Image (tube, rainbow, N blue to C red; front, side):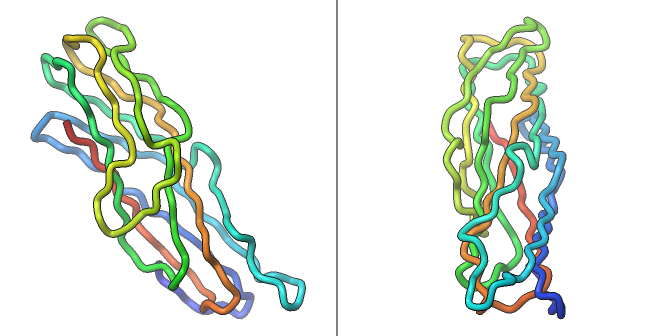
Length: 177
């Protein structure tokens, strides 16, 4: 996150999201939404910022597809990483707040289930698995669609002793099979 000092002692968090398309396995991932937060300086002398700040439960929505002709018992890994710098002690987390839909376009049925990702994961510069989708049908023919997967963010560790300004991080999502 890039800090630019302000006399008003406000902090802005801007999350830039990347559109990512992975062609090797014919998966695509579409990302919509963002989280912009302005945090005002505490008004009571001697007080600090809140312990944490959370985005809406659907600040970002992930959707995508796998255009493989035939999917047999596949497991999709949705991973996340972050670039940019936060002040020392400040941490950014992400989590999946609900299941989206998983539909086979050919069968018109829900063909899978979600695992993991409901607890916050601290974002780092390293790619980490956030959650998984497991195809439960033995065979899914046609495009498999992943729709409306909501993501929430949490920011922790802000202190009045840290420099004020604007910080920007980029959160990158990937899907692999």
